[in-house]
Image 1 (cartoon, one colour):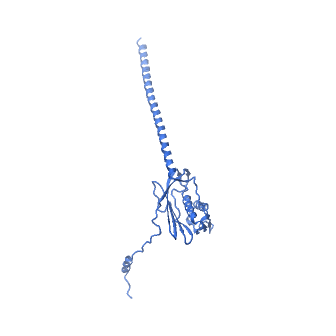
Image 2 (spheres, helix red, strand yellow):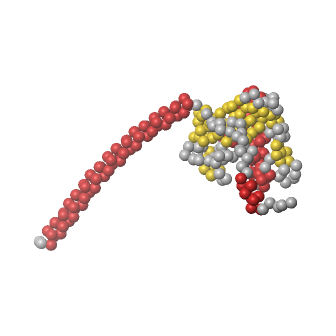
Amino acid sequence: MTEAHPMTETAEAKETPAPEVVPQLWDDVQPEHFQMLRLAPLQTDRATGGRPLRFVQFGKAERHNKEKSLLRMNIQLPGQRVRREQNHLDVWVDHEAHVVSFGPDSGIQIEPWNRGLGRFLVAQAIHWAQKKWATYRIEGFDLASKDGLNEDTRLRRDHFLRTRGFEVGYADAQHLKGSVKEVQVGNLNNTWNTDKVQILEILEASAMLEKAEQNMKEQEVQIRQHEEKVGKYKREDSSLRFTIACLVTFAVFQAGLLIWIATHR
């Protein structure tokens, strides 16, 4: 049997076309409906730093067919770019298996962190699924073991899941092999902390802008009044300085005159 030359095999391998990437269902869907979110100012956190008042954009889009449904959501930060996997959450509904699942597989990654946006997105996802598919289930899944390496991170994650209605369990004493049990969609909690994250409708946003503009005008009037007072005080100060200079000059002249009279007698 004649052996093939190694170079021939390499050339044949190079000529073999790479398998085409099959596009996923609704992969190109982008958010179409938008709302403004107000992130309330919070006390400075030692882990995340300052948490001032901030406004962000919440976008979402829906798609449906006989087999699947999709809710795609994201959070956009004005003047700040984030990675593709950040501030993004997909909710997939399988109507044949009666299963609801979340994406991306890497989990929810939120920026800015510790402002209530993660709970808001999950609450929106649960609320959307409960409207039509409350009897569907969310299958159990394993938790990332890397989160268990940091006690504070693990406790935050577990608290987040439990407040949503998920049951978290561990197969080891070190709390590294964690998992979430299967749960019915209707048994989940679809609320979030509205003191931290508030949805602003168009009329509310317009009212806020009008109030802000009115406050700016009032502040401009106050600044102008203060500037006029400062100008008046400056003019009075200049007059007083001139008067004092004249009095000092006159006093010096008087003293010099008296000395001259005293020495020429």
